[in-house]
Image 1 (cartoon, helix red, strand yellow):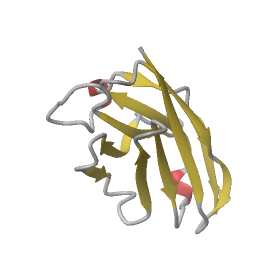
Image 2 (tube, helix red, strand yellow; image 1 turned 90 degrees about the vertical axis):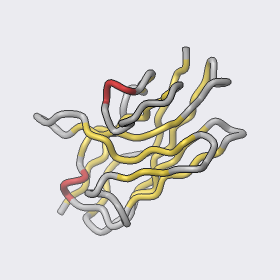
Image 3 (cartoon, helix red, strand yellow; image 1 turned 180 degrees about the vertical axis):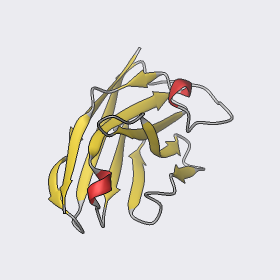
Image 4 (tube, one colour; image 1 turned 60 degrees about the vertical axis):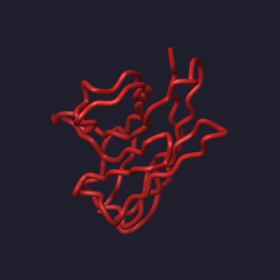
Length: 125
Protein backbone atom coordinates (compact mmCIF):
# COMPACT_ATOMS: atom_id res chain seq x y z
CA UNK A 1 0.00 0.00 0.00
CA UNK A 2 1.07 3.53 -0.77
CA UNK A 3 -0.42 6.53 0.98
CA UNK A 4 -0.23 9.85 -0.87
CA UNK A 5 -0.81 12.91 1.31
CA UNK A 6 -1.38 16.34 -0.21
CA UNK A 7 -0.53 19.70 1.27
CA UNK A 8 -0.79 23.27 0.07
CA UNK A 9 -3.71 24.68 -1.81
CA UNK A 10 -6.02 27.36 -0.49
CA UNK A 11 -7.27 30.61 -1.92
CA UNK A 12 -5.65 32.70 -4.64
CA UNK A 13 -6.65 35.52 -6.93
CA UNK A 14 -6.81 35.09 -10.67
CA UNK A 15 -3.35 35.56 -12.10
CA UNK A 16 -1.74 34.43 -8.88
CA UNK A 17 0.15 31.29 -7.89
CA UNK A 18 -0.17 28.36 -5.54
CA UNK A 19 1.97 25.32 -4.90
CA UNK A 20 0.75 21.85 -4.03
CA UNK A 21 2.90 19.10 -2.60
CA UNK A 22 2.31 15.38 -2.24
CA UNK A 23 4.31 12.97 -0.11
CA UNK A 24 4.10 9.23 -0.70
CA UNK A 25 4.61 6.89 2.21
CA UNK A 26 4.32 3.17 2.75
CA UNK A 27 5.51 0.71 0.13
CA UNK A 28 7.15 3.17 -2.24
CA UNK A 29 9.80 0.92 -3.76
CA UNK A 30 7.78 0.27 -6.90
CA UNK A 31 6.64 3.75 -7.85
CA UNK A 32 6.13 4.13 -11.59
CA UNK A 33 4.61 7.60 -11.74
CA UNK A 34 2.95 10.26 -9.64
CA UNK A 35 0.41 12.73 -10.83
CA UNK A 36 -2.29 15.26 -10.11
CA UNK A 37 -5.95 15.22 -10.97
CA UNK A 38 -8.72 17.64 -10.09
CA UNK A 39 -12.44 17.61 -9.67
CA UNK A 40 -14.70 20.65 -9.81
CA UNK A 41 -18.25 20.54 -8.41
CA UNK A 42 -20.57 18.61 -10.68
CA UNK A 43 -17.78 17.48 -13.00
CA UNK A 44 -15.75 14.33 -13.49
CA UNK A 45 -12.28 14.02 -12.05
CA UNK A 46 -9.81 15.06 -14.72
CA UNK A 47 -6.13 14.65 -15.42
CA UNK A 48 -3.88 17.63 -14.70
CA UNK A 49 -0.25 16.51 -14.82
CA UNK A 50 1.98 13.52 -14.25
CA UNK A 51 5.65 12.59 -14.09
CA UNK A 52 7.41 9.29 -14.55
CA UNK A 53 9.37 8.38 -11.47
CA UNK A 54 12.52 7.89 -13.54
CA UNK A 55 12.17 11.48 -14.73
CA UNK A 56 12.04 10.68 -18.43
CA UNK A 57 8.56 12.04 -19.10
CA UNK A 58 6.11 14.67 -17.91
CA UNK A 59 2.64 15.27 -19.23
CA UNK A 60 0.14 18.11 -18.86
CA UNK A 61 -3.45 18.59 -19.83
CA UNK A 62 -4.05 21.21 -22.49
CA UNK A 63 -5.83 23.42 -19.98
CA UNK A 64 -2.77 23.80 -17.74
CA UNK A 65 0.07 23.42 -20.23
CA UNK A 66 2.43 26.38 -19.91
CA UNK A 67 0.97 27.49 -16.56
CA UNK A 68 1.55 24.52 -14.26
CA UNK A 69 4.80 22.69 -13.59
CA UNK A 70 5.14 19.27 -12.02
CA UNK A 71 8.35 18.26 -10.30
CA UNK A 72 9.51 15.41 -8.12
CA UNK A 73 12.02 14.65 -5.43
CA UNK A 74 13.02 11.02 -5.64
CA UNK A 75 14.76 10.99 -2.27
CA UNK A 76 11.86 12.51 -0.37
CA UNK A 77 9.24 10.63 -2.42
CA UNK A 78 7.39 13.87 -3.12
CA UNK A 79 5.84 15.50 -6.13
CA UNK A 80 4.97 19.18 -6.36
CA UNK A 81 2.63 21.08 -8.62
CA UNK A 82 3.52 24.73 -9.14
CA UNK A 83 0.44 26.54 -10.41
CA UNK A 84 0.95 29.97 -11.98
CA UNK A 85 -1.33 32.33 -13.87
CA UNK A 86 -4.28 30.81 -12.08
CA UNK A 87 -7.76 31.14 -13.51
CA UNK A 88 -11.18 30.83 -11.91
CA UNK A 89 -11.63 27.62 -13.92
CA UNK A 90 -8.77 26.06 -11.95
CA UNK A 91 -10.99 26.00 -8.87
CA UNK A 92 -11.34 22.38 -7.81
CA UNK A 93 -10.29 19.75 -5.34
CA UNK A 94 -6.86 18.56 -6.38
CA UNK A 95 -5.89 14.94 -5.85
CA UNK A 96 -2.48 13.35 -5.81
CA UNK A 97 -2.25 9.94 -7.41
CA UNK A 98 0.31 7.15 -7.46
CA UNK A 99 0.82 4.61 -10.19
CA UNK A 100 2.80 1.41 -9.84
CA UNK A 101 2.64 0.00 -13.36
CA UNK A 102 2.74 1.09 -16.99
CA UNK A 103 -0.44 1.79 -18.95
CA UNK A 104 -1.03 3.21 -22.40
CA UNK A 105 -3.19 6.06 -21.19
CA UNK A 106 -2.17 7.41 -17.81
CA UNK A 107 -4.64 10.24 -18.16
CA UNK A 108 -7.43 7.87 -17.20
CA UNK A 109 -8.54 8.00 -13.58
CA UNK A 110 -8.95 4.23 -13.46
CA UNK A 111 -5.32 3.61 -14.38
CA UNK A 112 -4.01 4.96 -11.08
CA UNK A 113 -3.55 2.83 -8.01
CA UNK A 114 -3.60 5.11 -4.96
CA UNK A 115 -5.19 8.45 -4.21
CA UNK A 116 -4.80 11.16 -1.64
CA UNK A 117 -7.68 12.76 0.19
CA UNK A 118 -7.59 15.90 -1.91
CA UNK A 119 -6.90 19.54 -1.22
CA UNK A 120 -9.11 22.48 -2.15
CA UNK A 121 -7.87 25.16 -4.54
CA UNK A 122 -10.10 28.20 -4.95
CA UNK A 123 -9.30 30.96 -7.43
CA UNK A 124 -11.26 34.17 -7.19
CA UNK A 125 -11.79 36.28 -10.28
